[in-house]
Length: 153
Image (cartoon, rainbow, N blue to C red; front, side):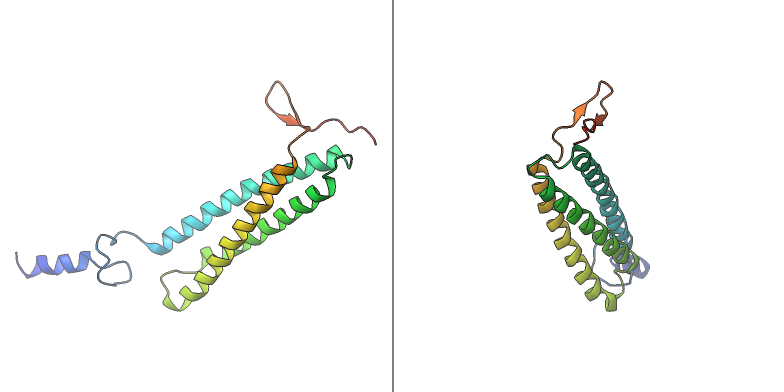
């Protein structure tokens, strides 16, 4: 082994910023990983947003006859607001470069706040499900769920 192969081994242990010692992480771009992770979380947030919007339509269409009408409206609305806020946080997180040391503290704070809000949205959605926002919805032969017809009461 000559000098050039020792040099190549040393360079193989540097990550994308030139930090030695990452060993095997030379091809991993942490900023790209964080951006993709934030985008995936955003897509899951959109799916939950659509589900909550559907639940809200079901509850409103069913009318105030349910004992849990007001709590469901409040919880679903809270969940929607939380999800929109989480989405905004994820956009800011995705735009920041995790490789820039001066932005890492801010990014960590934003990530922790977003994680706490995701946990809060999870708890709210557990209560929404427990109160039965999905009940009284009949399923048609095509598999499409439709709320019961408006009774006019």
